[in-house]
Image (cartoon, rainbow over all chains, first blue to last red; front, side, top):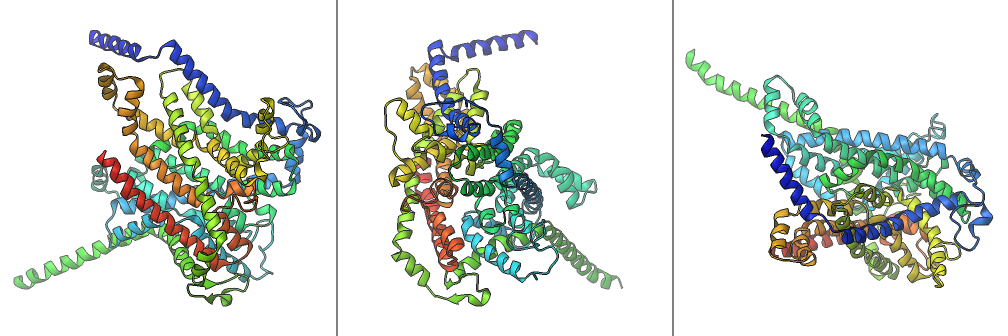
Amino acid sequence: MSVVASAARRMKRREEAGRSLGAGAKIAIYTVLALLGSTMVLPFVWMLSTSFKEAAEVFAPGMHWIPEKIMWRNYVDAVTAIPFGRMLFNSLLVSVTITFGQVLTSSLAAFAFARLRFPGRDALFLGYLATMMVPGVVTMIPVFAVLRILGDMVPYEFYFRQTWLGNVIGGDSYFALIAPGLFSAYGTFMLRQFFLTVPRELDEAAVIDGCSKFGVFRHVIIPLSGPALATLVIFTFMWSWRDFMWPLIINNSIEMQTLPVGLATFQSMFGINWNLLMAASVIVMLPLIVVFVFCQRFFTEGIKLTGIKG
Amino acid sequence: MESASAATTPRVAGIRRRAARWKDYAGAYAFLAPNIVGFLIFTLGPVIASLILSFCNWDVITGVQGIRWAGIENYRNLIHDSEFWFYLFNTVFLMLVIPFSMVGSLVLAILLNQKIRGTTFFRTVFFLPSMCVPVAVFLLWRWMLNADAGLINRILAAIGIQGPNWLHSPTWARVGLMMSLFWMSIGGANMVLYLAGLQGVPKELHEAAEIDGASGVQRFFAITWPSLYPTTFFIFITSLIGAFQGNFEGPYMMTRGGPAGATTTIVYYIYNNAFAFFKMGYAAAIAWVLFIVILAVTVFNWRVIEGRISYH
């Protein structure tokens, strides 16, 4: 055994040596990588550099990467100028709820489409597929209109209206931010495709052991779909965290905005104070970058698995 | 007695079987229910509603009573709306960045697919821009492209070139927007997809070609590139659809659609009509035209390009 293994190892090593690159090629590749890499990184460095500068230094000529005086105050000013803490809370609440809801509704429906028989299944599934191509703006218009009308119907004296929780329904409400995102044809489609790859024999064995349909879903399908579920979790979270147009149109009051919309508001307030604008951008970018650094493997695996774009 | 029981048993069994089947169906619908309710309320319903709305005039503020039937007026106006055609042109113009960014993604993927140390580090670096909140990225690029103090013009000045007034010139504003899109998309999902595609190329083919004395470039065009057709096609189609449906945040944060509407996209125009001018019917009509354009482009691509790939 060991002789065979060592022979195989030797062969593999020789193969690798034969295919490995020469020093010249390596230097060329590293040069190109470093060049492209710095193109990616420089704007970030520039952003950080600007965010710590004094207002007077921002427009000074020449290249000053390191500010003469590190202005931590810029960050304090940015955070106190508009309620970034509240916006961070809004973004977290909205993204977490949407992610949880979408994964739950999508996985239940995907199970029905992948495993159960019922009249109208294929027609319904085709309907789901067809709507995946509808641009968001098509559905946004009526949903906006309906929410607005509903919001106007809530009596003004109603207790929750205009409290710190926002409105019950309609504009400036968490309901408007969250509800339309709880369901997704894409998530359903993606999970269905994955559930189909789980061997049916496992279901049948579970049924023989006395499992109900929900038991099969809960104890067979879900535990075996870890990668697909993780992918959906990450991409749904990313999508709702970055979503801009819907929160922009539906919520006007500054306390009810999410981080991206808050940044747009901040921009309209502090037009050319680039040091403050960049400090605010850093604040808005940071949470997602932290998530990314910790979950990078899931991102790349998820893209390969599903072809979703972040 | 015996014959009677023999006659009823199959019927009872049949009823039981049917009851059991309907119980199964009810179970299935229970699984579907949460999703279907959401689907009807937030997708199918609104799609139909916006189709109907596109044949009406409505400003929302007047409430449901304010909806007026307009027939095909909105669509007729759309054909004569020179702004619409200009913004459609802008949308298509911005798509010019797609081939560049696809080539960039492919180059990055090829570089990262080499057997060298540190690919994980570089992959993280390239991936980073696409992971950021787009609104913040576009704000950063607005600053990068600032005519007096932006990094781009500072670098150009350092090598003796007077940079343009990027976001205040119609042409340069478009170019600047495309630069930010390029920066954001080159190292993101497309790179990872190409990387996955490259790893799927059979090694035996490369080895056989190497033995036959094919050069690296020859091997790339004879083996690697053809086996990447499906990936390329997928990326191309999704980028195209994305460009039709999106490109709102960029113009919104960088130029507010200007100068002189040069960076206003179709989606931006829909946004303005619906949520700034409150012309809901007209906005719905444009949105539906956009939907049909996307559908047509996608089907065309499937038929033509996909057909060519399989015959290659």
